[in-house]
Length: 164
Image (cartoon, rainbow, N blue to C red; front, side, top):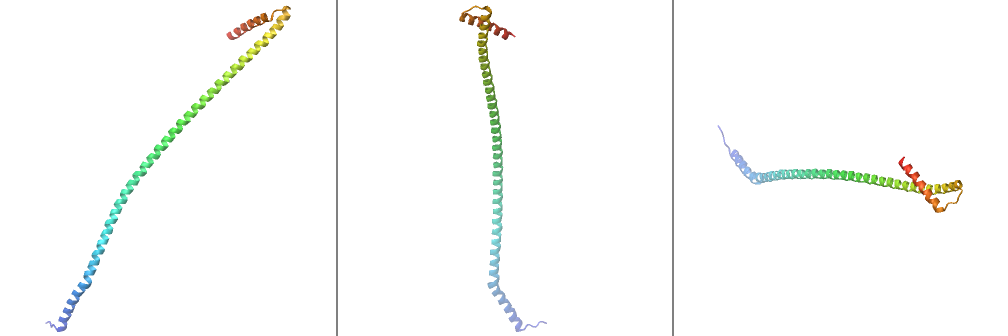
């Protein structure tokens, strides 16, 4: 049988009192501390989730901006290339035009020099023909008659040369 002594009853009373004292002094503050800690951890997790979502939004926004900047850079490069090609074509056309102008000016200069040389030749030929004619005819023709005759001969020679 069981024999309950006074010590046993006192021990049970002590344990019961100790339980309530510890519950009041230790379990409630520890439980409160643990609940607050759990709340802080949950708040940190929620905040981290919000930060992660915000970071994902910012990343998507920055990627969009980066793509837009790349597209703008491509457009700028394309425009610059087109402008450079246009400028090169304009420069080439202007160079060709200037070269053609120079060729035309040179041709005009050559034609003027040719005409001047031909006029000089006509004068020299006229003088030579007059000298030869004067010796052959041995008569004195007037200076005006000589010039008219020489010019007529030279015009005939020019016409014959032009037909060849």
